[in-house]
Length: 247
Image 1 (cartoon, helix red, strand yellow):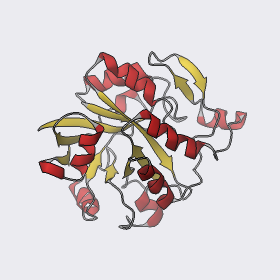
Image 2 (image 1 turned 90 degrees about the horizontal axis):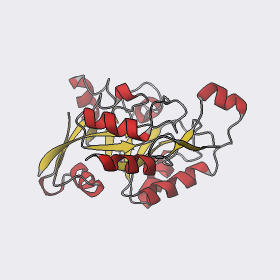
Image 3 (image 1 turned 30 degrees about the vertical axis):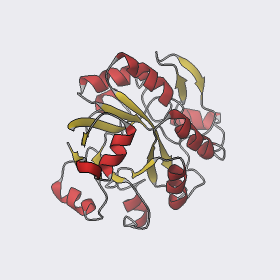
């Protein structure tokens, strides 16, 4: 086994709050420059650009995991990571079906939601309002991710908004999270790490990148046999000597 470095929370321009520079090839190029071995694409309430980034990564040695950052109806962000695009898209459709449609006011406030090819060429726009909350509560979101054999990770738990801790004042132990994520800010203070480590879930650090310059600001090192979703899963559950640590 050997250590591989990851950033498992990166947005493309499909997310309305992401920069126009967040195109598939630009993301994979920057990830390679930052020494990352594995990344995950987690746009807001959608995984519809994951396949394009996977295609763009074929020119380099980076593994791209399809994912999604779901906002629950109580405004908690949860990351779902999946072994394949098909599973991620099934979850996307469950979320998407009850989101309101985009109107002119929404687009002028949040920005465009661009679907792209691997080369970054726009090939459509998402017409559902991805910046809105989904109709699922926290338990339902985690259950949905698990139904499609995904990993459920509580996003940026230390933040004062859109985190399980900010919304509930705690991390409920009856929710089967596979890990808790700390953002680049939360990745640094040792006391903050200890605060969330006491819940017993593995801690990972991710950048939550909306700009190219943010990719790799927070990283996680996985001790695994090879770069794969399955190995990430095994490492989070400490199987066979595998492990995970904040970089």
